[in-house]
Length: 144
Picture 1: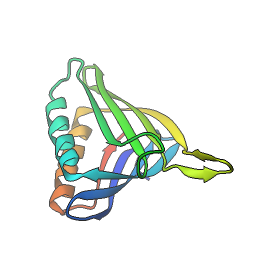
Picture 2: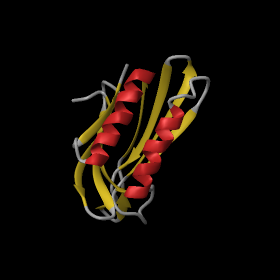
Picture 3: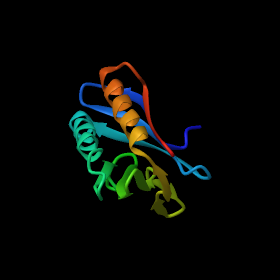
Picture 4: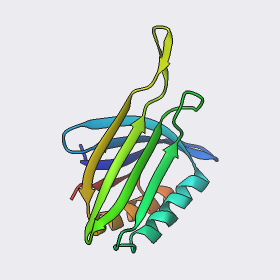
């Protein structure tokens, strides 16, 4: 198990990917599946490429899927924040797909937190590009 965030390509077609997103803070692990359009995926790579140079307080949110019972599958937000030079603080909020639970429609939710560093972010960005090109099937941002 990778500690951090891992995107695994489960399936894709002409319009979107379906990712299994595995998040771990080293103690807890959360796995959910999320649909991501190609345009959103391209914006993610471009945004992370810009963020990696903002070492004096930059913030970037990875937002995939949507929260709430109105949307298909799950939701995932990871906030990356340079607070100390050379350290990126990562806060994750995730929600599973909604399911019937008695008379209610519910989804599991979790929040995780960890730290990483710029070199590991660079590796993640390269892996995301390789995933897009079909050279890899997963990309991971590891805990420092």
